Length: 252
Ligand SMILES: Nc1ncnc2c1ncn2[C@@H]1O[C@H](COP(=O)(O)OP(=O)(O)O)[C@@H](O)[C@H]1O
Ligand SMILES: [Mg+2]
Image (cartoon, rainbow, N blue to C red; front, side):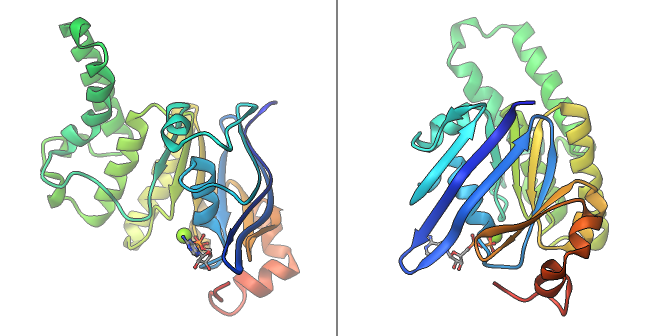
């Protein structure tokens, strides 16, 4: 099976610090994958390189077999890579429904002469389907600022889905959530992965999240991939135990 995303010897240097150090990574179509590693190990920088937010000092990024390393960020996002940041960036004064509608609206503006009732109806159905997917259907008309912290994170996942991505990147989606919200988020991500046939790459440093999501796991340490496998496999690895599962969360 052709890989959806691949990186070859990807590197990013910030002055004297090598944040991403020769990463060879691949993700299949439709795959759900977790990336774990202590704070400061280069996980977010890796996402920044894949999405084109920053440019690498070396190596390549391939998406659907095409070298996208030097494409500007908006061209990469147009190819179907959507991202949810660590800090939610929703429009607080707008309703939940309106937030998810934004990407549809900008899509339609391009063909505004042809926007008829049937297209509006179609987007409405798609928006409601997304809200169902992220369990916010009942809150469609609520002002987004009034949502709980967890619900805001789900709304942002919904906004990312409204861009109809093939690849969804989630950076610590359970940050600051309660235990209940974290559990619900695991269920939500698994459901999206099963229902929508998109690839999902999720960064987490919470080990119980990674166990529950039951995907293949990539472990990053000091800018490198040090292990890949099932949760059970990575748990057995001596280095992983020492640096990650051992005494607390040692930063990189
Ligand atoms: N724009 C930047 N300029 C300088 N150093 C950076 C920048 N972004 C990240 N870093 C450094 O790169 C390392 C990896 O950071 P990051 O990718 O955010 O780690 P993680 O997401 O795994 O916690 C850290 O030491 C961080 O301080
Ligand atoms: Mg990070």
